[in-house]
Length: 116
Image 1: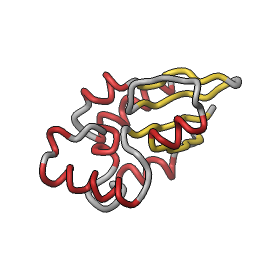
Image 2: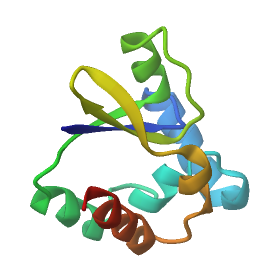
Image 3: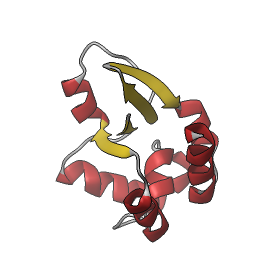
Image 4: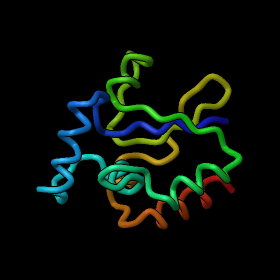
């Protein structure tokens, strides 16, 4: 099983700078809660980095434009985490649930619960 994380943000240096500015000046309207949970302004949160390193689950990360280029016939609301198993993609944690999360600890607890 592989988990695919799809951020509600586009790839590229300019998009990254735009997202950073958005996090600074209007964090309440930033559209990628998964980004906010796992990353600070400049880097990945240490707790998230450690969790990923210690996990036995294979994880792949995509910006939405990268994901849509690789899987052009699929439509999802972003951000989303998908389970890739037996050549099929199924939602693992959907946008509605991710957007309701208030902390990285809540995200990690949800992972642990879903993986049992």
